[in-house]
Image 1 (tube, rainbow, N blue to C red):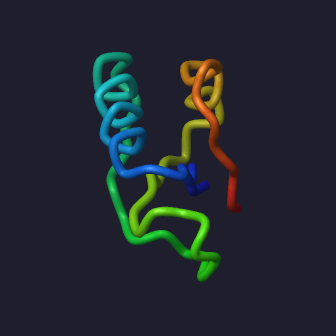
Image 2: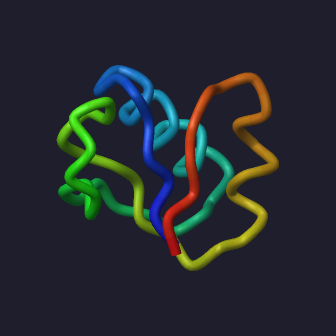
Length: 62
């Protein structure tokens, strides 16, 4: 799954949160062409990753 944010700073904040929680993830290019999104996103297979970012605005792209 890809967790897509509207700002690059949120991508790197989310990466830190997931790494601290021992969730495997990586920063990759955003798989959507909508210019409302920044150019990178988080890729992870862990479904519970979403639960750690409740206070952040994001979209999930499967």
